[in-house]
Image 1: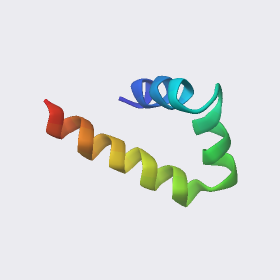
Image 2: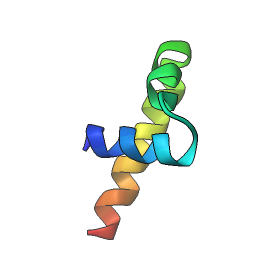
Image 3: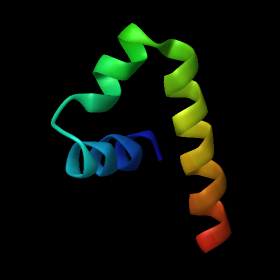
Image 4: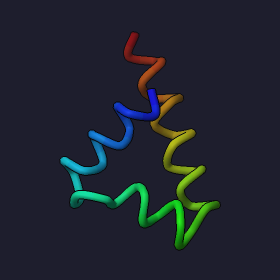
Length: 44
């Protein structure tokens, strides 16, 4: 799931967005990743 999240954010924003967010704002990264997991699981 993590790899899918990275790929998706790279496509939406820019290459390395999630990695940069994780370094600069770990809480924001965790929020975005948890939101992705919640919404992705609802689609299944």
